[in-house]
Image 1 (cartoon, rainbow, N blue to C red):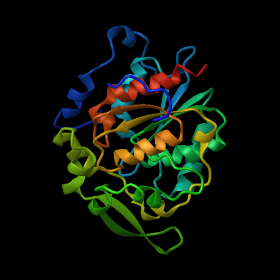
Image 2: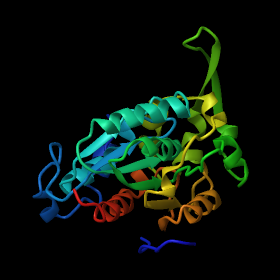
Image 3: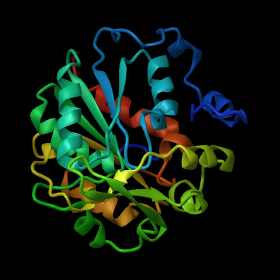
Length: 281
């Protein structure tokens, strides 16, 4: 694998209280907590971390990571990704980035990786890209075709299509993960009380997104970091490794499902902070 390898190495609100347990687990050290909550302007020298969620999720999917980054004193913006198609979603992300002051470390999970790849080309403030269990497409590629190059994903067979009216009056299709398959396909190493909540609240991805062609790829000019999920059943590890190598990304691999933000949040945070340390605010 190319790039310089790093060392190998949740908090949704739930009535069951499982999220609280995840909040406590592996919290940053007390000294880091003294840096402040990080909800306002970041500490001197720290860039803003902008998080872009993937399909079948919303911005709260980053909660375990957001909380930890804030404890370390980072200013964090978790973007609402519309999931309506790559061109639309990338344009929305670029508009949000334009409103963030100072340099940015831009992070994308899953489908959000494709969004940040395209959005960052229109956002000069982005100084580092971080991919988490993500698509890292090149210009001209189609996500569905890219995924098909490395078979083994269990995601497609677990999707439930729902016809929906489009803005132009035509019928479109929204895609959900079947709730009975969510845990096994997406998050087999996350406690079931958490995955039941995530499955119930998932936001759909427009079916057109897998057929959209990427217009530009920022990783050609912006340095990148990648966390590979070695037990991913959604985006297979072989595809993640290929993409990271192609992008000359600094890479760490962890034995996690597709949701390391919940099962390995400290590893995700460590990689983001590693990228942030290379950026001067």
